[in-house]
Length: 250
Image 1 (tube, rainbow, N blue to C red):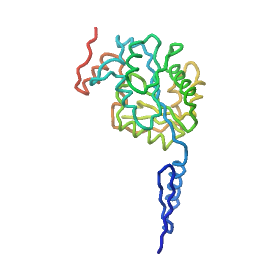
Image 2: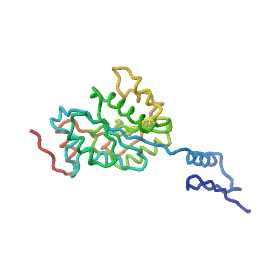
Image 3: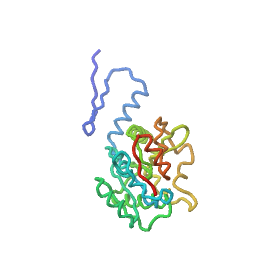
Image 4: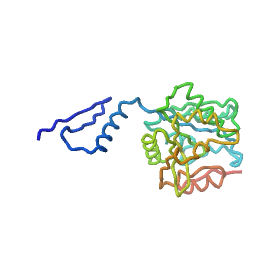
C-alpha cells in the first residue's frame, strides 16, 4: 500500500504523520497538539529571587557565604542559567552594597533595588513582578519561577523536571515534593500575577498554593528541594553534604 508522509514544519521543527496509517484518536490528538504548541510564540519563564533578608538568625550575610568555591547567591544564579529561563531578577536592599557588588559580577542578572524595603516575602515578590511587567510585558502564556535567595542548591535534574511539567500544565502551579513535603523552586503561570497583589495582608504567596486543582506536585528524589539556610547549623549541615569547609561564625 502506497503511503504518503505529511510533514508539518514550524520554526525548523518538523513533525511527521504518515497518511494511510491506522492511527488512534489519541495519536492524532497528540500529534496535532504538539504541532499547535510549536506554532505558538515561545513561552518565557522569569526567575525571581527575593534577597532582601537581613540574615539576623545567621549573624552574617548568608548569600555571600562560600559553598564549593562560590557564594550561595552565585551558585543559585548559575543553576538558573538554562535556555528556558528568559531572565533572572534579584531584589536587593539599597544599603546591601556587598551583595550588589557580587551580583554585578554574576553575569546577565537583572538587579532590582527595593523601594521601599519590603517587610516580607510577598512584598518582595510584588516588586519583582512589577519590574518584570514594566520591562518585558509578559503575556498569560509566560510564567515566573520563585526561588528564595537562601535556597542554595537547585539541581539541574529538578529544573528540567519542573520546567517540563510547567510546559505541560501551563495553567497550573508546579511545585517539587520530597517525602510528602513541598520545596523550591515553584513555577507560577503569569496569569496568576494579579492574584499576588490581591492577597490579604495576613496571607503570603503560599496562599496561592491552596487548592489541589491549581497545583501540580512533582515528585523529586533530590532532598535538596527542601534545603534552605537560616542558621549556622543549616549552613554546616549543607556543607557536610558536600564535604566542604565552612565559614567561621563569631
